[in-house]
Image 1 (cartoon, helix red, strand yellow):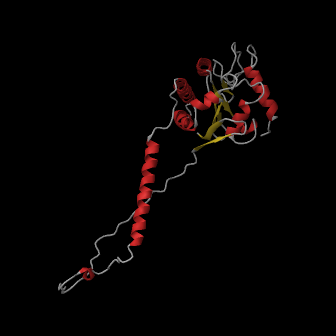
Image 2 (tube, rainbow, N blue to C red):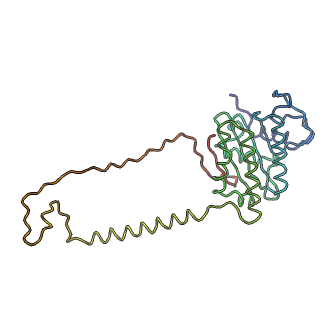
Image 3 (tube, rainbow, N blue to C red):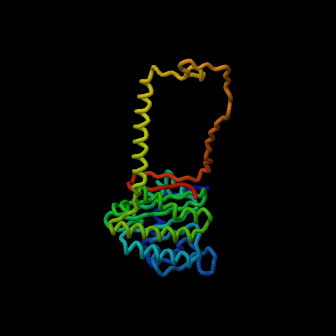
Length: 277
């Protein structure tokens, strides 16, 4: 595949779709007749950029209106981008390219002075996904734990190629996270993890004490023959050892299917997660 002029393509694409309200450019989705031709959009495409044509026109319109309403009402941009191959739009992994697209000059991503926003990117060539969070308000609503829980909401649908269902779940969850953050009760890990950690630490301390005490019992020696424990005038006419059973412990080896995700930060700031769907 011939690689595009990366910086120029990003700027031209985003300016085309984000900065010219009345322009007759295609939004990357299908028109109402079901084909892939460009459409005439009377409104300004700002939140859902479907360059891989995964959505019908009506699906795109509903998602676009929903994302716009959430973003404007809650002061944090919520975006969706689908591409054929993310490597055509920047350098690095999927998360880094998502950050580069987000911060492209004139892109229009982000709300307010901090450019708060969350972006979900799908790259169809190798089925890569990335979720990028930027800005203080967005980072408060979608911290590392929140991002991990959020991905579970939409990845199951995307894994089954249910694009509209996955994007709808993503928007609903983003709205819920942002509302909870504004109410001062953001999605955070419960106390169960801390309790388990405390119990583990206490167990390790107790085990250490037991091992130390055992090491101090140098006069105690295990006897292999029961006659060694006999005292007084007890005499055994015969003795024998009988093998009764054996204990076998098995450990299951988990299969790694390569579909896991991982989190991280990027050079331009912000954080996010990425993986395969």
